[in-house]
Image (cartoon, rainbow, N blue to C red; front, side, top):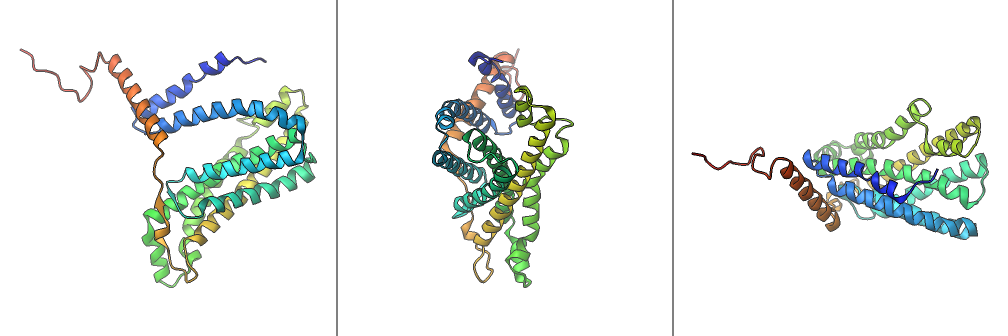
Length: 298
């Protein structure tokens, strides 16, 4: 089925609607919505051109280089989404995602599916593992760092009562890991009943038998769950270890609030101004809006 660029552009109305809803409800998500949509479109179009020579060359060195780039970008994106940051966070997340995705890839793709280093199989499948672990790590770290930065008294109290760093952070660690893994578990719970995942859909459209498609999809979901769990576990444990010294003192000075990017602030202001202007037009030029004083009459 052929899809034109005009069709793709027309579907962007959904993104405009989401940005408008965010502005009306004062969610302050307009910049994130527009930035994510723009990045999604540009990155997918570029990917369509980049993958052609990679698949044609089918070189292990090129495959490994591209996978390394994917892991680096995933680590940068996961750490960028957190409200707070700490020194060395990118390196810890990079190592966690690389280790978890590498182990699951060797186990699943090398033994279960036996794809070898065929670029046409390895890059899309490993990309799914990395992409899902990115989301899980981002959610977990965001909760973990926010709790430590905004509620340090709970940690200090545990330490004052004689607990070590792991006892002081145990509840926060558990909550962070639960939040990170919940979306993956929810997807697994409804797959096959409510939703048909993308990999299985693609195989069905290409003519693969439903029985084989379901087996492939089951393997991938299991690998995604294992990758997400491993990446979350390593990233939160290593992050907690970096916030305490050898004597189990809580180093609050290592936590800092992440400044908003200039591009996000600009896009957010632009979207809010556009939606506000449209709203005023529909209200008749702004004369009768709520909270707008009317000139006295008579």
